[in-house]
Image (tube, rainbow, N blue to C red; front, side):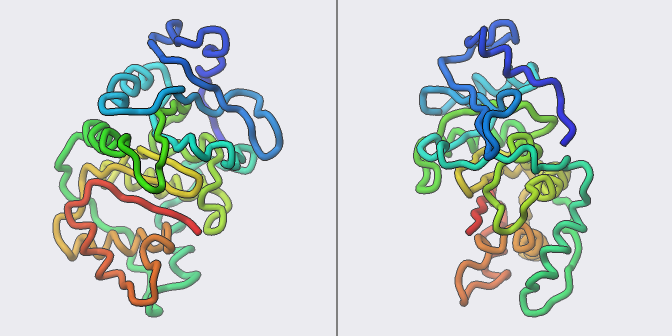
Length: 257
């Protein structure tokens, strides 16, 4: 995929990041992929757990240095399979086409793909919403047992999974950049930010959530195409029942089988 200059190699000789205008705590550079060490670090993550305020303290300065924040579960990071060499560029894909492709593989109730949902009204600053959601997630979740702040060289938050070659959705989509194209579209329409990753879970903050059920049902269709496992996990689940949970919701959480 197309890449920006990667500031992370500087941290090998300057761990505090002062040359990048940062004041980082002790941390780890990760460069191991499925095919062995990558030619440069994929991400840096802090050695200490994230807490309230960590995202704001490190994330904003890091952004000016070309690094974007995301929480990762370090309890299982050794089991992650990074495949940047197999990842394309998100900008080469169309979100509507990606979602339609996945929808047509197993459409619910044999319905036709309804197309992309319209953009709701922005109700919060996307970056401020991301910081609030990250602070809440820093307390941990069953799928995010040991959240630490990571920094990733990426053009935009939606590109973070592709930038590191994250393989969480591999059973649903082998090229995560195609799903990042959808995340880019959500970034534009719903003000999302990628705030957390674990082995096969992804969470995004939402600054423009659907305000009513009709809007939410349109979004639910996109979520089903993006990640059917988390939308309809049981035989009795429906898109409508899932949509009810999306009204006003500031966090979207997905997991792949």
